[in-house]
Amino acid sequence: MEYRQLGRSGLRVSAVAYGNWVTHGNQLDDDAAAACVAAALDAGITTFDTADRYAQGRAEEALGRALSGVRRSSIELCTKVCLPVGPGANDAGLSRKHVIEGCHASLRRLGTDYVDLYQAHRYDDSVPLEETMLAFADLVRQGKVLYVGASEWTGPQLRAGMRLAAELHIPFIANQPQYSMLWRVVEAEVSPACADLGLGQLAWAPLAMGVLTGRYEPGGRPPAGSRATDGFGGSFIARYSSDLLLSRVRQLRPIAEAAGCTMAQLAVAWVLRRPTVAGAIVGASRPEQLAETARAATVRLDDELMARIDAVLDELVERDPAKTARPNDVMPAWRPSPAAG
Image (cartoon, rainbow, N blue to C red):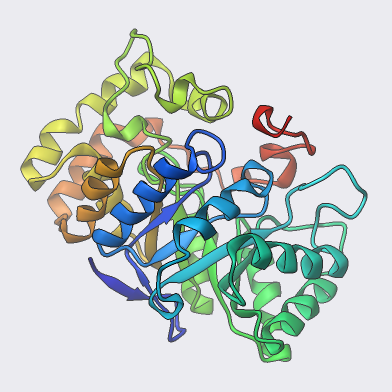
C-alpha cells in the first residue's frame, strides 16, 4: 500500500481507502462487514470512510464494531454530517446544533473519542458558513475532530470555507468528490481550487458504482447480487447503463492487460494518478474484492495508457461542473430504510 499526505496537512492516508456507503448495515451483516474490514487491514488500508446518513447510522455502528480491536492510532476514521438522519427540523444541514449533535452521535456509534476527518457531506445554503465553520472549530478545539473537510462542494464554496478556516486557525484539509474515468465534473473548477488551497481529494465512486470493473454486459441483465440489482444502488448505476457506454467500457480491457492489472485496478489507478487526489474510496461486499482493488496503489499508468483511456471514453465522459452534487440530488428527504423498519 502507498500512503499519501492529505493536501498540505501532516495527515497521511492510504491511497486506497475503504468506504461503507451502501454495504454495512444494508447489504452486509456484521460478520460480512467485519470480514471486509479485516481484508482491508490485511491489504494495508488504514483509512476508513463512512457517514451518519449511511443506513441511518448503522454503517457507523458496524464499522465501529469491526474496528473495535484495532489500535486507534493506527487508522484514520472519516465521517460526515449534513444529509438527513431523521424527520426533525434540525436533523439535517450544517447548523451549529446539527453539526455538534451529529458529531457526538457519530462518536458514540463508532465507539471512539475522536474522528480524524469530519466532513460537511454537502454545502448548506440555508446556514451561514460562519456558523458551520465555528461549530467545526469548537469540535477541533475540544479534541473530538482532528481535521475538517467537505464533500461535493464547488470551487467557490471551498475557497470561502478555507478563508474562514484560516481565520479560525483550524485545519481544513480535504474535499471528497465523486470522481472516475466517466465522471470528471471536478476537473474544471474543483480540482484547480483544491490545488490552489492545498486541499487533498478523497475520490468516491472511482469504479463508477462497479461499471468500470467490466462486470455489466451491454444488452444483458445485471449479475445477481450486484449493485445494479439493489433498489438504492441501482438508481446511481442507471446513468451508466447505456449499451454504448458499456460497450466502450469493455474496450478498456486490453488497456488493463497492457498495464498488467484488472479493470477494477485500472479504474482506481486512473483516479490515483489525477492531480490533488490523495486517495480513492472503494467499497466491497466480499473480502476478495478489497484484496484486488487495494493492489491498484501499485499500478503505474504512463501517459500513453492514460491517452488510450481518453480515446475510448472521451465523448461519454460527464464534465459539466454544474453537476457537482447538491443535497437534494442525492437524498431529498429522510426516510427509514427497509432494514430500519
